[in-house]
Amino acid sequence: MELTAAQIKDYNENGFLMLDGYFSAQEVKVITDELPVIFEEDSPRRILESNGKVRSVFFTTETNELINCVCRMDKLVTPAMQLLGSPVYVHQCKINAKQAMYGDWWQWHQDFVYWNIEDGMPSPRVMNMVILLQEVDEFNGPIFLVPGTHRVGIVDAEPQQSALDEVKDAPEYMSTLSANLKYVIEKQTLSKYIEAKPMFSAKGKAGSVLVFHGNLFHASLSNLSPFDRNILIITYNSVENKLMPVDKPRPEFIASRNFTSIEKISNDEILKFIKKEKI
Image (cartoon, rainbow, N blue to C red):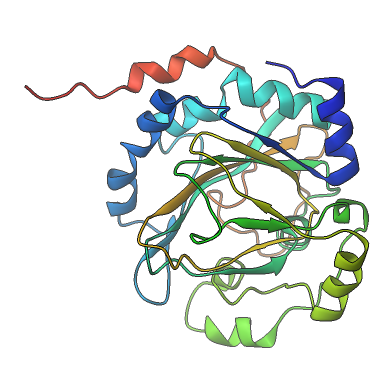
């Protein structure tokens, strides 16, 4: 499934696309039916909020057969190849959970600063595919984006000492995953770019997909609604943009060093995971 020339132009200009209703209700249900099992797994790949609720669960392409299948679907891989201009591999894959009434915020940041400094990614030839697993509205923590900021390069790359202090008794990589992030966009920087182009709130029905550039400014608020807001984020990187060696590499489940290009599969493959109702 290819993007149109107009969609590619919009992405290159604004740094993101919103694909409404891209996954069917049946496809979304296949994924959401798996979430209870995913959230219950006690693993370093499961990141918790300060209140003990699940914040994120990370995957490698070997840790969950269903998620592996989603990552290889033609409807995701083909657009990623179009936008990055090469075959791709999965750099990172995760469920970001904002549980009803408890899900915390994500501060203003750029993803690429983490992938560059922490993981050794040479250039921002990388992008996210975000699948909305429930309807996202103004109350349950939509992702906010600043159009055009994917072209400004890395900004505000000094680490926050408060983030480092908060996780001093935990693995160092936790400062890149918690509500108190290691690298954030400062108020003055954000104000400057929002004056040029106002923020966009990525709201949509379940099954919609947000596509956005690895350098785009983005953030999200807490979930104050009584309904969960879960998203599946797949980060595709160009196979021509392989990670360089770093002194303290983050775990494989956060930054994959398996640079094998993805072999696309039929979109219908996900339907083999439909759970049969018990009689």
